[in-house]
Length: 560
View (spheres, rainbow, N blue to C red):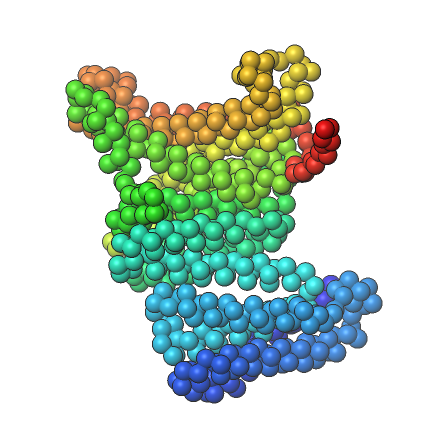
């Protein structure tokens, strides 16, 4: 096993290191080609990089094999099954790498300042040539690496396309061009849906992970130096509670590592819609879709317009409270629907029980909270800046704020999306669940009433009912927590305890009860109790198999 491990490591390092040799050999020639601006010569030179990289990698791996072969057992050789990729695999890798290079050359222009101009194009060509050589070496060494190479190319391509669209959309006068806005939003939606293709869990996780890698590189590259360091440190800190939370909830039921990573990455991606909408609001963009126009508005402004236009005569305090509650409910709608969509697109065909749906929906919520803590400048990134970098290090304040978000706000996402996952599981396995309910003598009032009175299929009505209930409960739980946390700051006196809220004398025991303790107990203690009860219900633990979508064709005979 030690010899095999040494060969694995040597082969991988050989592919990466030897890819650099032809790059150095052709660097001078490529630089001259780029200065002349000849696109055909650039392509030929780039392909030359890859071909020579492949030759060097192949020769070096052969040397490694010869060096270790006499120490390796026959069983080890049969187990690793060394092979040479087919011309189809090699050609696809070369073409895919070259296409990605051209996409990056166009789509990442002005995104990464170091890549601008001829030197930047040369550096980008060197990078992709090295990656292409390493990929070809890996494909020769490991047969399964082909699917990861495919997934990496898909994730990279979609990442480059969306980054390019994002830059084009919000730079210059493009934001005020309605036709360009409509076309861009359509292309972004299509590219976004391509991220969740019909692949297995390993491939889908690799696609999403590669896409997130490029997004992370983009964010870090465009940060100012002080924020860049804070964001990197915030990511390292935020990963700790995310891993702890995942480990805690994975104890209920075993899950494949690829599926856990898939749902975690999907949860991180579910923050994109709310961030994209916020960027549209701050840029003042108007989306003209030919027959109608959409003007993104701030949720607080929308709520204020609704309250002032429909509820006349309300006091200023009550009006502010209602506006704040509606704003948080709007945010809850966007975030919970986004989490539900990525959960459904990513894991629907992998769910085998209601517990499965609940557990993996919680992983989505943890991924969402992890990304939110890094991207939002007022959360972990802000904590690092305020308590560790800008001023004298204040570890007490830093750890207090980090623990508060790591425990309380993470639990809010976990409870709301976990409840949504429970109802989504009921909707997915509606057929067997209804059969079990009928067998036990339970009455499904809504589904049976619609079926008996209007003739709607009972299973269809039950599914719609469960989805509606799940989304409603998730949105209310999410919005209500945000409202309760903000509630003391809205009131004129800014009470911090129950005694302050009710205006009691200073000696009252209610002055010892902070207002923030109420949502903390409700969501942390109550949330744990609720989720544990749902996880251990027998009907939720029952394995019901994986969903299979089939089409039934019925032949009809027409009688004249």
